[in-house]
Amino acid sequence: MDFFDVLNLIGGLALFLFGMNIMGDALERRAGNKLSSLIGKLTTNRFAGFITGLAVTAVIQSSSATTVMVVGFVNSGLMTLKQSIGVIMGSNIGTTITAWILSLGGIESDNFFMQLLKPTSFTPILALIGIAFLMFGKTNKKKDTGFILLGFAVLMFGMDTMSAAVSGLRDVPEFRQLFVAFSNPILGVIAGAVLTAIIQSSSASVGILQALTVTGQITYGAVFPIIMGQNIGTCITAILSSFGANRNAKRVALVHLSFNIIGTVILLILLYIAKALLAPAILEATASHFGIAVAHSIFNVACTIILFPMGGFLEKLVCKLVPDAKTQEKKTELDERLLATPTVALESSRKAAVEMAKTSITALQTSLSTLFAYTDADAEKVRELEELSDHYEDIIGSYLVKISSHQIDEKASTDAAKLLHLIGDFERISDHSVNLLESAEEMKNKGIELTENAKGELKVLVDAVVEITDLALTAFVNDDIDAAFSVEPLEEIIDRLKEKLRAMHICRLQQGQCSIEAGFVWSDLLTNLERVSDHCSNIAGCMIEASGLSMHESLHILKSENSDFKKKFKAYSAKYSLPEA
Image (cartoon, rainbow, N blue to C red):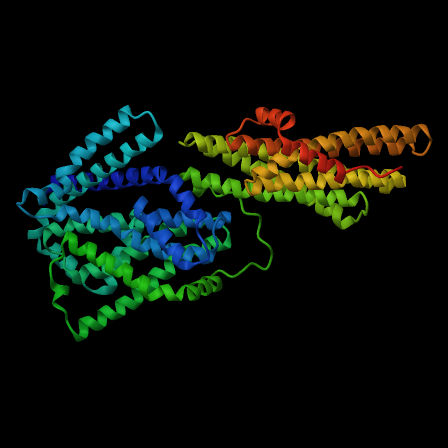
């Protein structure tokens, strides 16, 4: 092996890693919608998580990427620690698919059809198709397909280049001695772990190991410990990703590390025993592309079989290693790790928006209670919830802008715009909760008392506002179009109630039953309550439009032709009729 072979080895390695990187990124983008739907189907059932982890990793060809996503999911609250354990175990098996694909490079046969299975035979065609998709594709999906095909072609070309560059090492005694040393299980594990930690991909390091088999100097006695070490080394990506995340996200990274370390220790002991007692001939046999793929699969499947029943133990172990804090942790921000998969990041945004919606509606309804029974505790709660709602709007809005800067399809873009509108309305509802609270505080501090008639009238309007906020929340959280269509007739009732209450208040003023000062507070109350119902109408309208209907057309039909609207309007009129004076 001369100087030029070394240059070819470096170039081949660079192409191999580059191809794997662009192929993996494109696969993640291309599979984004599928990933989002898979996450939605996750349950506390560990087996469901296992299948999900296996499927996702098989699709995106990287257990490291899957684990990093899982860290992000747990950090954002999309997944629990318990769910993540099954996903991680599944990802360890899913990642073996890459080694099986790369093993095709080791096919040696003069048969024409067998030769066609060799990557060097079909990758030029894939590269041609890939460049055509990339240059002439009009959609992001077609371009991503082009990147996948080109990435795979570059990856296989790099691997073939590496194999050709190192083939001369078959005659170098020192190289053989190096791998004889790796037959020592401890050294082999360390070597595999260090190499994989450096390049942060067990699939890539297994591919490099497969490329080196052309030297004929690598035995299975060296391969088994190196593969064990590679599975430990790949954990570095998740560990680095967990820095700055919450405690559960750190625990996910530790589950990944613990799973591979415990599995390695158990299988290493079995390997030592087998070597000492049986001295199996396979340990001295020369490894091949196919054999390494088999060894990689055997190790990962064996680890999963051994540790799958121990999921509860792993959960307890990492909870002891990373104990709960004595003080409550700071509110988790939306996780930027998920931006690599925009559809998943969008789902995370929606989950945060749901929490924001619940926060805003709780703030509003708590403030309404202070109008009739003021307490300092409720006042403090309203202000805390309003601040939290503002915080949600800031982080969700910024996050949605970042998502929109990525390559996303039309539906995702529409969903992001919808969320931006919705969080604006929910934030304004929380603002009105503080306005209502301030009116309650003004009445308390100035000793302003509403007449009994005014209290009864206000109770009717408040009850209607409570119901319309519940309907708006249900429409958003559950994508409930029926609830959304129920908002508009109630909103009209609230508008009419406001005008009636304003007119009745003027009558009381004229009769001297109410003070001017109380009148100012009364006007503020009516204005804020009516505006809350307007924002609920906006929310319902946004949900109706998201379902594919035009809000303006729908409202016109509702008010002029729809018997259901008239029926609900009549029912709400009866339910929220004003008490007799």
